[in-house]
View 1 (cartoon, rainbow, N blue to C red):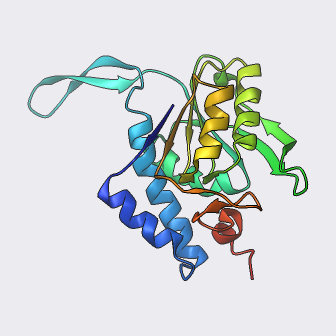
View 2: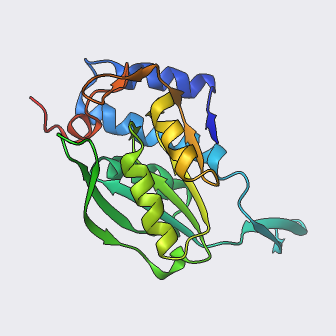
View 3: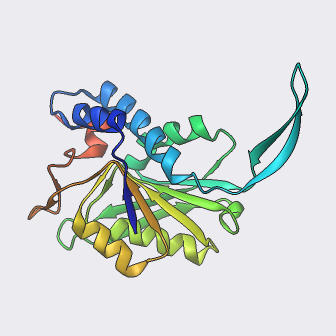
Length: 207
């Protein structure tokens, strides 16, 4: 299952972040801004509890989030989305999953993981700008489920039909939230039109 966020502000920012002329500073800013919009939609079903708050005028009945939140960026590009979520949820805990794609097999290879205990019983948000083949996303979901997670969502900036199909096949209980479902993967397993290499563009490591 997936949801494509068509809000005009998201689509406007998406047009700018795609542009090859957008430098790494602005790319990082846009990744943060788009992440906030997409997460706003992704987290609308969070469990809340009723609380009483004293305003300057009277007591008010309000609601506060009543679940542990664990944000899990897939290294390295997922780190570029982390500030966007933490601005919304500053008390969220953060885990890390290190995966890279073997250029020959296009399969994910794990090299690091560190997850907080709140993974079990909390809401886990996997973040990665690009959901391409779905291999890294599925590997991260597998790892979280092995750690006891039962409530998992994926937030990305762009994806494609091939990646969505791969995640939906392996994990039909996980919803993917994205700013765009792009056309396809090319022969190099890059999303078309996509963003290019999101990690390089985030951190200025490309020429």
